Amino acid sequence: MDHSKLPSQKFLANRRFHLYTIIGCLFYTTVLGLITKGKLEATSFAVTMGLMVVQVELFAWIGLFVFGNINYNTVQEFIRKILVRLLIFYVFVVVIAGLMFVLVSAILSYSQGINMGLFFQQLPEKELRGFIVGSSIGLLTGTVIFFFFELIAAIKRAQQLTEEKMRYHYETLKNQMNPHFLFNSLNTLSSIIYQDVQLADHFIVKLSSIYRYILDQQDNKLVSLENELIFVKDYFYLQQLRDNDRIGLEILVDQPANYLILPVSLQLLVENALKHNIATTGKPLKIKISMEDGKYILVENNLQLKQQLDGSFQIGLKNLGERIKLVTGNELIVEKNNEKFCVKIPTIAI
Image (spheres, rainbow, N blue to C red):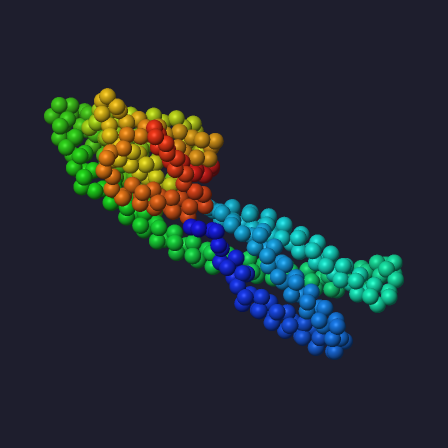
């Protein structure tokens, strides 16, 4: 999902926001004038309204800066990040509101010939009410704006996640349970069933575990990296029985149980490598799965591309990248040179 222009950024850049701000501040200042029974003079009215407009505009942009682009995967993580950012926002509001009221009051007092020493001596008592009102406006404005836009973002995120989930599951089942894959597996099985019954039995167990894993994980957003690697090994085992020494898989991952990853993501990349590269005895296709800095799981292979490639390769990577962005908030990284093709999938530490 593209966060380059969030809903809140679009709204704050819209003229309607500034118009609503002015109308709202005018209404609030008018009500305040009625409550004070006309004690709010024309000059005070204009200054009060002007301060309110500046505060609302300023606090809205500060709120956007503080609360923008919050990525989270669990409710606990969301609550923790929100509480920390609310605390930061409230500190900003209190400090800025205090500085604004002191500065404006000092300027007005100086213009009226009031001694500055006396002004600062009476400042806590005279400006306490204005400071509290201003701070309250800032806190209320920022909180309401944040939760309004967070609600909009959450609804859109849920809708997109549901759509991507359905498409992702469809593509996964289509790619893994298609007749071509099953046909190759059954052909391999038929060639060994009369030669090695024990090997054939082991082959059937691996084949059934692949389908079981896909069906079991289709409703999960994240799975254990350890389980995903076991699934990849089972899948590659079936492929290697058919291709023998023309393909190879190396896995270099420490403590995979400590990480989460999207289900079937590694297998899709391994399948892409097998599907789009030439593999011969003289030039075997070598696939390596490794970890980088505890943040990314790497799937890389030596580049031996077939001459004719269909468009499913880029579409599959795009769909996987969109799914990863929606679930983890991080980007899929693709690196390619003349000798190697590498895809980096962000992981989540448990």
